[in-house]
Image (cartoon, rainbow, N blue to C red; front, side, top):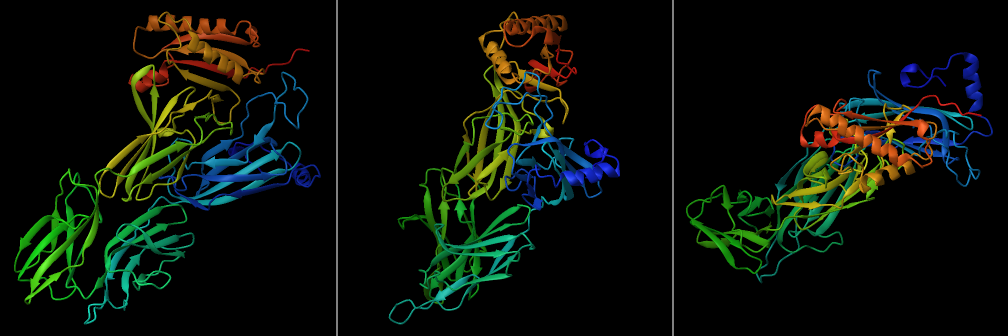
Length: 612
């Protein structure tokens, strides 16, 4: 195995060692390991569809212990944009089925190569990387012998496909016989459809009734036919009733970019119509006017007179607009906010050549209540501290209602009962036309910010539907546990920060809530005896510097007192009140002050030697 210093891995030199490593890979005790990648393309744009790529590690050993490992991500020019390192914290092995002995207090567990390693498409600067080709290299040595050295090529593509529909033959006529009966449909409706194509593309076309029921579905892979034709029949061969129908096309490319477009102005008619109406099937009185286009099928737009009508579901006319000599190129209508929600129909009654004609009815849905979102969590707590254990949470999303989604936003908002006005949008996902069924979150915020310990996050899902109505729902609170993360990526030293949520009284003395934090820390670090513990208290910037320093010194001392009589040796810890000298944020906004006013528990590597 050839590994360079730039990979973050220790350098191996010498042909003899290389031959030895090759031999180790074939040792009888070496684990059988299969490494694969989830996708060859992905789109980390925050829309919930293929926002992550991950390495799958299947092994005959579980857990798979390693001397060390690293996942290195390089761009097309070979520059390292990110490294995901092994969790190198010095932690005592846990008792388990394969480890029944009681591990010594100062023994150290080897690093574990997890079954799944995620990359969210962010660089080491905490920002999304640009579109293009990347190489993911996984390198590592197993504790029981053998190694892994495998590369994967992935492409990031966040550009949405440009998709268009055009109904060139929007009407299918079922002729009427002299006795008034309707004949079987003859001919076809034709819709031109345009989209990029290529390997990994998936296309789904759906013929829908006016109320959204599925009549027929067609699927294609890699390439989309330039047009779709429909003969006015169900898949079993039965002719559909005369009426207004729709076509929905959903396109998903290999990177997970998803687009949905719809055409609502297609008709199966009883007899040949002179005109039809075309527009958006979804409407709300709180939004723009309903706008319908007049499409001449035969005879042009000249008439002796006309009346444009809106009818409710019971057939009563709720709106009339009359005119003469020529039909306008379109009609608009503004409904009232007190109108009943449901399906309405628009039509034109015309006088032409001494005959009274009625256009086919365009069906639309008048929406007053909006599309109802739904939101749930895979877990109520998680600890995104880069130890590959409970580092992610999945947010399950869905919606109900007859009107589809136009766009949506899922905001993750940090709140604190100690700071009632705090509502910090820490991260948000958003997309258009389609809502994903699940969204994976690794705790990363804007600009690469990390979550801290015992924080409360409220997920808020807002959906604007195609009628323009907005509905919002708050999910159950999501809370972090003790987030004990490396101070430096891939480093040994650790820190757990607790933003102050009334853990002390007005004099800086720790209270019962603060004592619960100390108990949680003691429970979390009970396998970390190799470390020296440093307790620090920090204040927000507002206030007098001397007072801030004195208060944090008192806070740190009362925390230290809580460690007396516990398993942690007092000669292996210290405490300090830092005042405002080491602020995480220089500004003094509400969120910045909330984060600056904090407790810190630092585990420092002092090369502790066990005394015999």
